[in-house]
Image (spheres, rainbow, N blue to C red):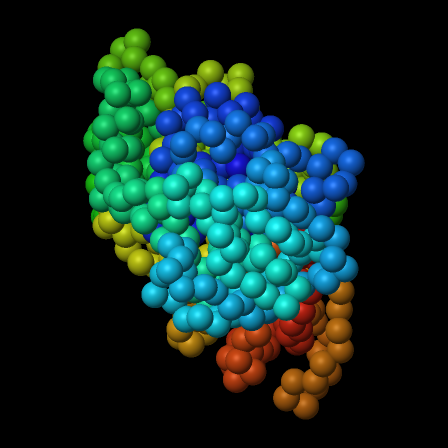
Length: 512
Ligand code: XMP
């Protein structure tokens, strides 16, 4: 149950890392509706509120009568306390960040774990008295009751955030709850996911035809590979080369994807069309809209051709594969009132009036799970582990008008950065590293004995779990130095390399 936590998705992911399937539901979901999902366990997330704030979300008391083992975290722990008659007080002793907790012996959650451990806290109010029938099982300097349990009723809670990396034994605490308190079994494995999805896709698609837009990214590749496994040659993949791709991307899709999956692939060269449509445009949203619109047109045309080429008269493509991930589903469900920061254009993201039925085999998966499914399906590591790349491609990494020359310059610089990050073994440590060309900015340099008047590029290495928030990656200086040397030596138009040291928020990952 999501009480508005920054970490709700992280909790769901940590549960899945225990090989237990999890879903996020809003805290306002009626208990009956939740029970209809037949959960083996319920977790109440943290949240930004004080239980005393006006309109603070409540944990309904009936939830704790259902017999389903339940675990409250942070705000969820306090909401649970309040619903069950314990005391939550404003002690004035806030705790934020790393905190030592002392845990009791003979507790289910902390079984076999050290008596004193570091946990991650973020709370103002504190539980000062556990509800009757509960045993306090942990305490910190600022939280008299930092954990409690009532084994008979299957109810547990902690004030800290077990899902956060900085809670040393957080994952073990979660495992104890899932396995020992709730009797969950670790059956959510990649092999099972693949088998289950293949069955579902077959049931959905029957003997109809399917198309899939490949973007060169992980999600569409894995979605396509799954559908290929399910329906074989009734799938045609379409790859639109809009000219805004990274170096080697088109070739990789053409060679590696086909080799790994045996899927039928149609490549459409639409470079001229996109460049013409983007001529003279610098405004980021306008660029995004143009790219999205042109993509749809090219894709529609390609889909008609696929039908025509398929031979069977009267047969139509009924289904379209989309690489929608679970965070997209959660966000679009929970996004009421959220600001439109950027018009995200998913290559393959098409309007409703296209009249395809969607096949979305990754709807329940997080990015790291998608990667593991990709490995399971035999996609090459370079494809599975590649950095996320936005649908509008290099078009939104050129600050200013997009031209063929500028694209060529940026493509070279980007390829060098990616090569050196891979060589340093950093691919899996960073989330992605956009290289941004400040095409309308010029800077003076000196190369050889001459003055240059070139362009700067910006390196934007970020670490992130889900791209919702990010921090700039502290890359080793020698790696940065090599990237900078190589770019300024090998790409004539670039005479300066700079580093973006902004977290998200306030900066987004991409510059446009
Ligand atoms: P921002 O820039 O919003 O990016 O912090 C978050 C993540 O999304 C990627 N991104 C996109 N992906 N279509 C996509 O498929 C888009 O229009 C788009 N814009 C940004 C970005 O690379 C980062 O991983």
